[in-house]
Length: 302
Image 1 (tube, one colour):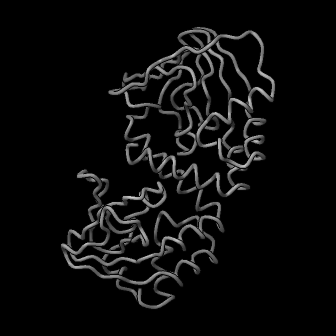
Image 2: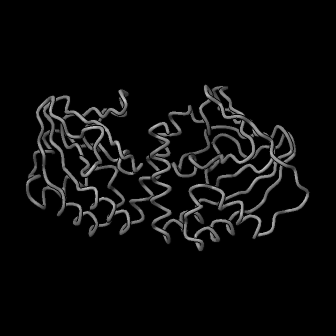
Image 3: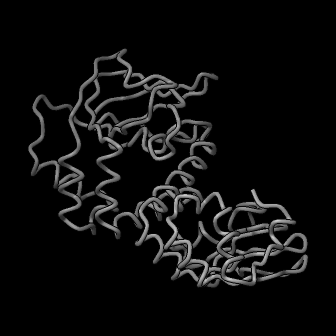
């Protein structure tokens, strides 16, 4: 976390901007060449209390890393974030590909590093650990907003059991099903094949646990048939049915499972290992951006 004294250490020079960028938690996975590239594009911007950084209704051309002070970000009349030193304004709306953007206003005298949106996207493509860190941070925010569950327990999804089948789907049938998923419908076909091949069908009897709270989050599951009850140690629960993914946010966040997942009926599911999925995203940049956009839109409540 930056403080006001540190923020004044030469941000108007390339070396000073590089020091500031290195101290940002969100940028910590970047290698030296990527940090230098961002530092070359960044410029120091200082705002007085009440000054406007971003205007809702306009595309986001620049994002802002706060090095001192505080910025409030709003969208559709709701506060998205109160941004303090070490964090950014405009990132979520940019990565969500939200054409309406967001508003951002300095609450107090504030110093920032302004980054062109194009430079940020270029850095995503150059440096996959940066993408991985963005996915991790977005997923952690989503997990918190849902009380640790795979869906909002106050607005649970409709549970549909699906269609029971005795045999496993063929690879062709699974590919056809995968391409009905909106995000994969326009994905590179080689990427879709890799994703589907890395999924394994698993079956559970009523009462079986798919996992327990505290287990390592190394995989996610798409429920093909059945009902799964997800319950936190605090006792909050939500039921999940067919065509719903569970464990994805836990896996991206990299934190232990937040809930027990227990089969309430016979369950057929497809298990997707995290590392295999990350390898696909590393090899297919457009799909990685689609994943980032999906999580960002979820953070925006869409």
